[in-house]
Image 1: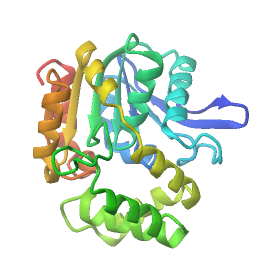
Image 2: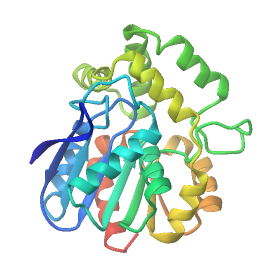
Image 3: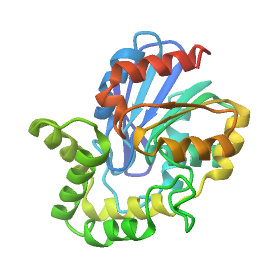
Image 4: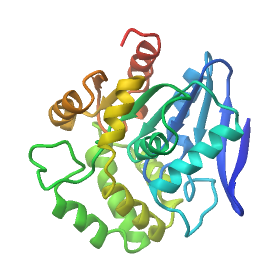
Length: 271
């Protein structure tokens, strides 16, 4: 079932809701859409109610200049889950979609959550102790990405193209694959993407990451390129969480079979 859910007057989120059984909910990352989770939908909808969401100003959801921050995205997620009558769910965030999940927890707690999976996102994006913590990247590099790239459509294309080829996957992308990834991002206009980027970089959800991992079963799936820093941070912040290492930032797309298998093992209590 494909549907639209109004989260406030004039703003609708596009949602795909397929399968039946215990619910699993996927939230895409910065400027990306439900389409990135196509292999997860095929797999998990065979045994579970599988829900994927386009956040506001992403994909087929309403483009708006209002609420392009992860506090609002967390509120939106709560409204979607309530309207769909989703209970006892596994929430799966990818990249900045993890911020949406942590913000949901900040606002609503973990009472209605069965388990959590966070795909390749540190709970705090930036730090002056960047050499000793798992963060998105050096402060100067992140500032340059915002200042030099997310100022016009060409800059957004160049930024996503470079990130896709250098960080998202480990093999060389075919032209049509790279074009598809870039087109996903460009559904969000550059001026909204800039808002989301800055909101994400200035987020700090270490408290929610720590507390939620104590309350419910939690899985982190992290990319190989920063696995050492990620494992160190998670082990200190959320020692009860499971950590798996796989591929690049888009590992659930490039290595969908391996990713789905390790999530299955986690959900079945073997993780």
